[in-house]
Image (cartoon, rainbow, N blue to C red; front, top):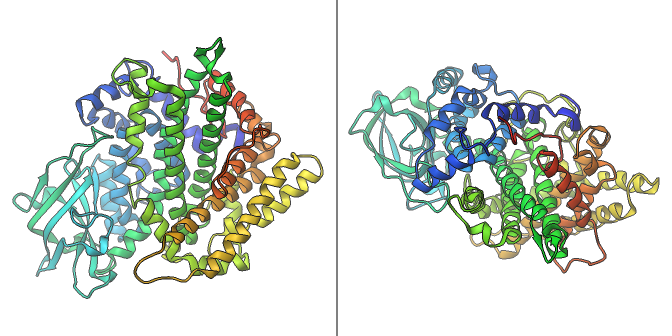
Length: 589
């Protein structure tokens, strides 16, 4: 792994793919903003663009190296999908769904199944994930699709609906009821090859019309006495729910890449407009209200990036804690980005609503529409908050003890540290060690306080960090006092879960800055200025404290305003508005 600020390996790989795709502002390129806008207007699937991504080898990144692919680093997959989503969320969602469809086999299948599926994916097969049903939504345990045992396998009946690539996918990983005992063990997973079924075993359901990602294949599939061979069973019969929940720990974190790509696009548009546009004789970015909105949005995007970097590395380094890491990430990052996009729309004004070729191919209104669905994927915001609420007793206990997996924490937060290989056997439905990241927050605050004492960072940074620590101490008390309820969860519990996610984000930012500050500040490029005196960290903590204790911003507090020149510098230099150096492809031939 290379130094954090210079050429972070995952960013380097994503930037290389970006260059091969060419300048998205060039209307003649296949994967251009203009083409994506036209496809969206026609509600047409981006087939040719997906084929180009196939040629560039992206499907290989969905297949673990152990089975012949090139997936050995989840943080690399995350940055690659972020790069695709930055150009167009529809493409990212349409193409990346194959990983989501296949992941249950990587997590719970036999080696023979994994190798066979890997070969199919590497050969271009599209895989979908059949979890949800029309009448049950996120309540997977209410599913009615049945797979009844026969002499040679299973007879499948029922309908899965609102499934990504349900029509285009050659294979579908299906969660089906195989028993009626009234529990999670009633469900199993089947990897069904539709080509082996033949009609009338299944029929595709019509694609639904969507507000965003209009060109995606969001549809369904209905099975009628479909004969599925016994070797389609993934893992043991009755293990389907457990395998899905473990798989979601990976996919929920990877969904953050979609949000970051959307944020990159929206921030680029709003910042470019505000830096060029004049109003009342001044650049729009110089007006106090606009400057504040840009600073808030930039800080939020950097905070979302920090959380995603740490959570992505946690897949390898803190695997046993992913039950909490994934729920936090899937709630916090899309929520934060939704808010930032809305705010940036105010900066653009009427141009945020324009479609077609009127203003920048209508990119902003498209990304705003498209991103709204990310919060729904792989469990909506309430589902993820509820997952945290279910873990409150354990999280309270571990937070009180301040137990920390020191080696795992170091691996998750030090971008120069080599990551261990991903071990699926370390996935757990219960994070027995809690969240090492949050439980180590006090240590990080003490380290920051010492740096402030010797003048390395401003005293204001240490004060904000200490305020977060006080909030975490209060959170620990409330978590310990929480009493689980078997039926109706009180609204206060969801508020408590939201506060937990904000505190996690603050600790992610603190530890990421502490472990990488020297290398990042010494690196070339505009991003170095974000790290030198902890500017981005202080801005991120200010935003977290605003969520923990909402109130009017202090007019004397200029930390967010001080971010804006660095946003302008990154925008002017043609680099990604990011914590790390990432040159964008702009103005290329």
